Structure formats: structure tokens, C-alpha cells
Image (cartoon, rainbow, N blue to C red; front, top):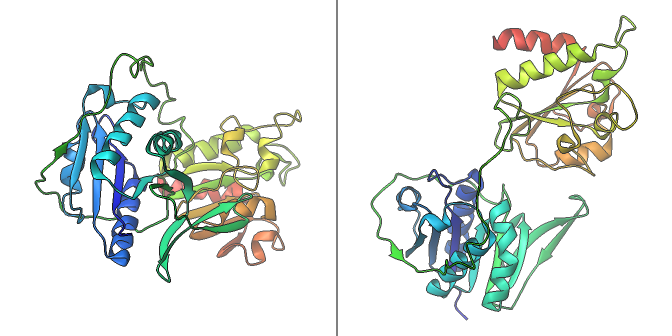
Length: 342
């Protein structure tokens, strides 16, 4: 059976698309070329024209669109209805989407409506000996599984890093408008407002170029025999503000609050990186005052360039886990870095 691909992307209220969407475009283009088949692009949102123009030269055979105020904000009922309508209009056998909170939430329900199957968090997808395979990580990125399915339609959400970001010049595009159900039932959930901390207090930044990780050493006694938690907090916050980096933490430092120990005000369990935390995909990572234990380092497997600052030359980072280890005092190093950034 000849395959046909459909790439579905939700367009944000401001007309933008997340970074992972551009990577998914690149992955779908490569897959369509390998399979020698065509692919469609399906967009939904309040105003999809800017996104459609940006994707005009990506090689899609058709551009399908669901547009309207009802589809501006993330909402399960309307997002699922739009995706289902786009899939039926395309008649695609494989439907791919960027892995975001918005698409991951609906993809299982859309697969049920279409009588298909769904897989999320796919790390890659490729054609091997004429068979389509996707890879996915399990057990905190320690086990990689290769999946194949004969059932169609097959819906797949691709994670960040699954493909090289596609970039092309905007151009005029012809859109095929698709109607999706958006009645009173679909509109029962109402959007009120977005609540988020000020930019200088936002420490988790998935699209940042650098991941800065703080270990428990920041809250321990320093060379003068004293604890300098307030100064550590100030140094780290200043660096995050000047560099735009994302903040991560080891399990030992985020657990200190529950143990009655001194804590950094900018650190929470949401910042934890490692086996029981998150697995970020920033291009670069800098670990400070942490010893590079395996449970923590497992969260760094998708960081391309790793550097660490530690006073212990025999720490875990020195054993092949970091590209560069600076044997130095993190307080002194980061003070100088902040000075240079000024």
C-alpha cells in the first residue's frame, strides 16, 4: 500500500510555531524523500496564513487549514476536532506532529476517532530495508526501543532532535480550507488568561542555548568554613538573567528543602535533571558544584557539548562524562563570568 504523509501543526495565537515544529518539518521531508511519496501540511489556529507562508517552499503537495477564533488557544475538544478534520481531508496513512503539550494531549484521542494507532515521544523515524521504524526511549532514556506498525492510519508525535530544522524563504501559498466542528459542546472549556512569572524569574527555558546546572556544593561550607547560600543565589540569578540560560539542578540540591537544609530560592523540583528528573536537549551544558554521578548525568545524554566546574579533579565529570572539566571554585568562576557578561 502506497503511503501518504500528513504533517499537522498547531499555530499559536501570535502566528508562531515552536522550534520542534521546524525540526518535524525537516524529518517529514527526509522521510517522504526516502519513501518516495508526497506529504501534506495541515495547520490550525486563529490565523494560519503567516505559518503557511513560512512553510510554502517545504515541498508539501497540499496545504490544508482550519482557522478561526475557536482554534486560537489550546483546548482538547477544538484541537482534536481540527486535527481529525485535517486528517480526513488529507486521507493520509501516516500523520506526524511535533511533540508539544498541545499535540501530545490530543493524539491518542484523534487516533481513536480515525480508527488508527498513536505513538508519542518518538526520538527518530526512518525507513530501514523498506520498513518504517521509529525509535523511542524508555526507563529514563536507558532503553531504546524500535517500533514498527502495520496498522494505518499511524499517528506519531516527534520529539525535539528528531530531525534537522528546516528553513526556507516565505512565499505565497494556496490554502485549502477545512471545516471542523466547534459548537457549544467543543467550546465548554473556556480560556481565561495565561499566568506566568516575570521573564527574570522564569528559570526553565527549553529553547535556551545553554543549560546551567547547579549542584549541592553551592549550599555547602566554602573555603572560609561558612555557608554562602544568599550569595550563591545572587550569582546564579545574575548569570541566568545575563545569559538567558535555563536552570537545572541535581537531585541532591532539590531534595534539600525537604530535608531542612539551606536551599536556593530559584531552585525547585521542576528544575531537576537526571534519571528521576528531566532530560533536556540544549546544545550546551555547564555543570557547577556537582560531581557528575551517573543518575544525574543520564539526563545529559542529549546535550551536545558538556563542561563542568568542580574543585575535585577526580569527580565523575573527569571520567569521560564532560568534554572539558575546569578544576576551580565555581563561586570565583561564575563571578568572573558575570563580570565579563556585563
